[in-house]
Length: 365
Image 1 (cartoon, helix red, strand yellow):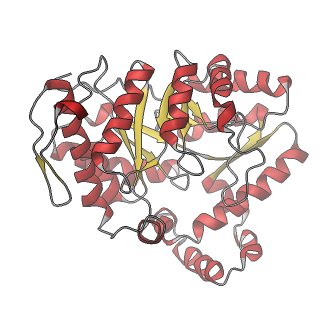
Image 2 (tube, helix red, strand yellow):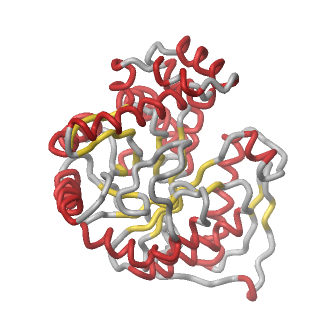
């Protein structure tokens, strides 16, 4: 299993709450080197408060083996050609260590935060990925740019704006996914998918994997070379007392996700559709403090992996080892003792689970 993490070191994603230690872009160079020293396979970079491509460039310059992935960058606000150039530059800088992870975002953010017209996300992201690949193919092979789809028409590339071929042109693309439609489209045109944290192992195995296999079959691609990169919900600590606090935080996180209509499929699959609807009502009424109490221990343990440092590695392996190729993982880090524990857990997790697929190879590479 390929083990990756966010920055800063030891970040345990708090959801809507402010992080205990925010990402400091001035420390990314040194922090990325530390991840490599600890034995991480990769760095996953969110698009929240910093530009993920800039963070990735700093991390790539600082390291030699650490893989760099946007997890995820928001696709639609950038043109496919702009995203193609950012990824091409990062792939050149990292000597082939970059993965382009893309997400679609929900309609409200596309319209009201980015000021763009909305279009159904599935067909749009399919066109987007294929447009990015067409631009890369133009740069790598010298083939005339001639891409046309319902969303994009690209047919101009002059020498001034053509960066030319690179040594590692086969850049993997992963798509964020929850529902079967997006999984199927990922199978059609991407190299992997990044399930949302609410996607349980059973949901991935019985809903998501059949969908991406269907998509891969449609375009004649090998589904066994497809990456599945999970960001599991985790509550872990060194002692039971410390673990109780982490459990309170993760219960609130599950409650928030349960209230979000965009993630409802992952709750309906487990017979929790009515709970999700009740949570949505509380969310609309901004009754945030009431929501965690509605997530009982059975529901909590269905979506979150919980255990002390001594338990968590084995629990994650047992839950996800047979179904995912990549997993984000960290523990709160307060000193060298925590770093030593983290390094041990990373080694244990890397030795378990499904092997990460090789980088894709395409004609013209």
